[in-house]
Length: 296
Image (tube, rainbow, N blue to C red; front, side, top):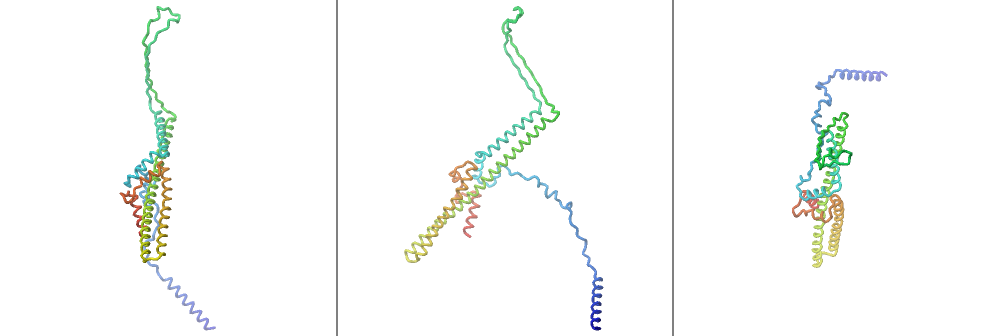
């Protein structure tokens, strides 16, 4: 009983000493209290100064690639595409409407004149001695000046509406041209890539054929077995099948691209240059990527 009380007293004494020591411990100086930055301290006006004014791609952006074939295709497509032609016609019509609406705010000056010969009739109940004989020269001229003050703003409102319509038509024309040119450029790049893939597959067929001939000669000379020859024959068949499969996406892209610019498949086939004979920048880049991919 006494031992339990003494142990309880010792525990209480230790706890009280620990509490007193912790109360005496001082917190080190951590410096100024950090504060969160407010929106006003961030120069967002400078960072987002031009965020609301996104630049429209410049007309003729495709010339930056330095590819004469691509430029030829796009120019032909813009001239032949029904969508581009219709958008240009709508823009011209909207421009004409805006000019017509603006003319109502300007003064107008009209002038007219006429000259003719006149002979008075003698059948009017007037004695003949009072009627001039022969033909008389008669002429008249008029000058009119008109200006609509537009007190109620009808003409100004019509001009504002017509100007907005013309601007909307201009943007629609630019959008149609941009969609057409980007679609032609994408199809051109796809065709270049697919033709490069097809060239690689064709080269693979030639390589497999040469290997098959080599294995056949080795079998004839007793250096290889029929098993190796069958494997070489199978490799040739596989390469030819891959070449045939590679022609399908080319036909598909040619058909889609032909609809954009009203081209025939033969026309597109002639335009895409072989990468080995003066490659265009786009074709050359894709050719290098395909070559690197097949060599890895």
